[in-house]
Image 1 (spheres, rainbow over the protein chains, first blue to last red):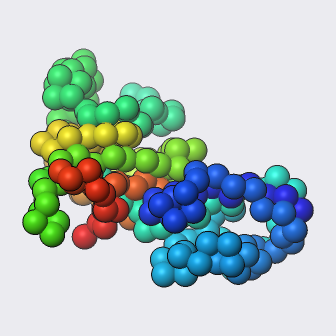
Image 2: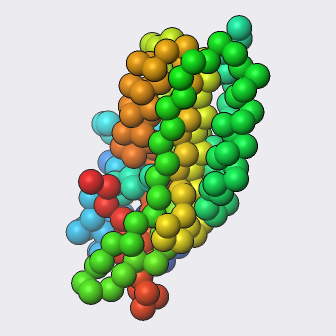
Length: 77
Length: 148
């Protein structure tokens, strides 16, 4: 399973990219451990996860080409 | 009168100019059902961070999700209140200190609805819409804005 991951806010400083692709994920609960292993700096940051532009409150199955977004606290205005 | 419910362009590159705001107000003179406008303008503040001044904020957004969130916020406001018109504009990219980055413009027959909705919209935009501000300091370092 290949999913697209969009990176926003201060997470971009740590991940040093706007976007990455993750392979081998079947469930949204797998996203965080995989990212934390790759980018240990994100462990210190709180952020929410959206799947296909909707916030996820609980774990869901992932599908090919799903779009996951990593969203730190919003600070518009 | 048909109320405005279609999707609107929200994001503008750079600062929102006072001329654009003035022209937006002027365009409403033909909407004679309106008796009250409430306007909120967000301006970039020269905060002091560790003895260094903020000189600009660089805004970014998850634009597709933000536009959907704002559309839902608009629809809910129109459904719940007696409004005639509503416009929301937010900057993307760099906005310098003293410039306008958010323009919320709500119009109704009477003042109560426009005052109330204008405030609610600003709070929802700050809390529920995926937009981020990066404060650029004078020494070219940055820190990510935290909404109060």
